[in-house]
Length: 268
Image 1 (cartoon, one colour):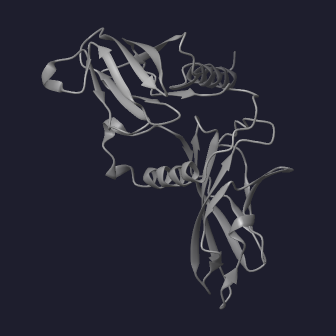
Image 2: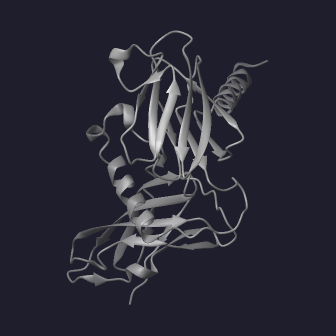
């Protein structure tokens, strides 16, 4: 076997092994299921639910390090997520999560590689009827995406893991450009938040319709479910916009942040 072929095979094997050990998992919510979650001593694991949690009660789990627990829990009241880390070798834990009047059981164990993020969904991973997100939820997604732009300001133990990419792809219009600065995916909501930079080359302001903003993937168009945008790009200036793409016409769209997108910016 020549060296070049050997290197190609080695690259393929490593890539396949990495894909098989993906650190992010998604599960539909089912109170009849006990969910197994892998923890480690070196890296936090974050569990995300579709809404604010009522309570977390567990064995061998504590929010106070002075309790010398097997598993350290970080959770802020009213949030939809919590983070964990093993403090002892071969640590195990068994918390119950009270969410929307139901109890969901989790089982923690220490492993060589942790599940960095575990996302619980209140609908199937594929198919299912379309679910319309409220404007409050859509605004919250934009704010959470903004927080991802400021990772240094977050406490590492409570950071919500999301799939994120900075594509930098440019959609060119006659007098301005639209650059996708970042894409953030929120699995539970099946939503992508796009951070878009609009740059005007003309001396006068360029107006656009914020309600008509959309994303294109090949021949598919995804209108923004919500947009945080001013509606104008200043003369020889820059404006920024956030827009949310949530689901698809037949249910979950399961769009990846690594797909090739372009921005549709309608003029009035």
